Image (cartoon, rainbow, N blue to C red; front, side):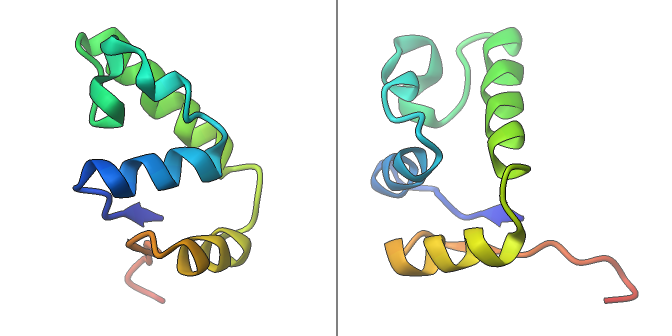
Length: 79
């Protein structure tokens, strides 16, 4: 899944859906844009990846559509 959360508002909405709204408020995560260090960035990406894996794409798609979070499913060439 590709998230199109370019603006802070979209990031905050997605973070709320992921249950990490408080986490991205930490200064080291720059309001969810990325980590201040490569280690912080890996931690944030790993956290989001782990959360996304907890539900099927169809469930996330429904939640993102309902919350108006820009996203697109990733497809391989056969799809």
